[in-house]
Image 1: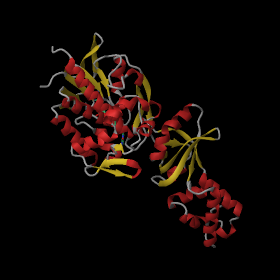
Image 2 (image 1 turned 30 degrees about the vertical axis):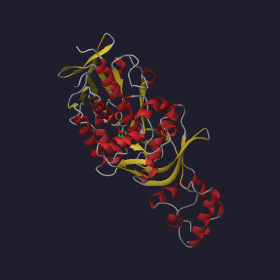
Image 3 (image 1 turned 90 degrees about the vertical axis):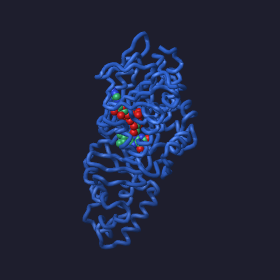
Image 4 (image 1 turned 135 degrees about the horizontal axis):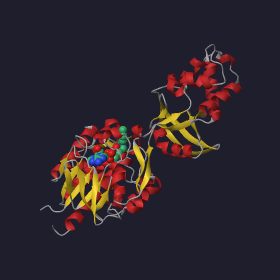
Length: 420
Ligand SMILES: Cc1cc2nc3c(=O)[nH]c(=O)nc-3n(C[C@H](O)[C@H](O)[C@H](O)COP(=O)(O)OP(=O)(O)OC[C@H]3O[C@@H](n4cnc5c(N)ncnc54)[C@H](O)[C@@H]3O)c2cc1C
């Protein structure tokens, strides 16, 4: 028989798993979602394909992806980490497959299939999902949460889980309400900033290459002449500057650099070749194409969409015939391809950030239970907590692990209370 009422606020990945787990553990679980349906952001994940975790097996390496705060997840990962997540999804009918870079996706059905399975899991365990039910505030009395205020009145419970997400992509419903609720309960909120976000640059040339994806390039952030961080992979050129996995993954460090005096971005278009090897390769291409212009000679080396931008920045005049290009100029061209510079001016903001960095301070949450250290019947899960990771399934994994634990702990707590 069910007993103890758990109220979950927010029907994203963390909230859906927390609700299902609380119901499965015997609580009366109610999920409040302000949209007409849960999981609006989940449906956008992985461009609709949902990269739901990573197959990285080394827990220390996995947790290091979340930066300094990753250790906070150690305990929940030991109970419901990536391996348990994979088994869980398979047990609820979502067959999975691994793709390049240890990324795990549903084998079929994409994000809608994942959402559907989660919903069925929660409802099947006996939970109630109430949509178009926005939590307006928490009502606290004598150091405990009594109820959630909604436009239809107060919803009472024994335990409460905040799963309202961050502030990124607010059109999906994640508008930062959970930070307000956490502050109301006495929690510290580390100021939220956009992360995994496209980057604006001062230069206009990326606009001429809008939509062009550069593969196998490296991007470095340089400060005072020193490289402070770099990434290798895919970069997307856009009308405002840079997007794509490596620029987005670096956006947090770029924002921090801008806060403290700025920096410059350097694209190495040929990271696999040394300057010397690249110089020889260009010389060889030019020698083969005697009588042609530089533009035609670069076709074998660069994507066609990028050639005009390279020529614009190159020291060699566009109309010069390849036979007239000297070795010094070839060396300069190779140097340009190895260090194409851009000046970052800011991030595109919360509207386009994949995740939020910052949130409810982790030292005020018990890492073993996800319970507030301030209010005994309050729990947190998902992006509302001050933890974020890179692309590759790390952000959803954090939601699954914390959601599962918060649902479990809230149910155990709610059921342990004497019946009213
Ligand atoms: C475009 C895009 C692609 C992404 N792709 C991936 C990916 O492939 N892999 C990956 O790991 N991560 C990905 N992410 C990140 C991932 O989607 C998020 O980290 C994750 O959705 C956070 O889950 P959450 O449950 O904490 O919050 P959210 O998903 O933000 O859900 C919060 C829910 O709470 C509801 N809510 C908010 N306030 C209230 C309130 N006051 N009352 C009631 N309900 C409320 C919202 O409507 C929302 O439904 C992507 C994000 C974006 C934007």
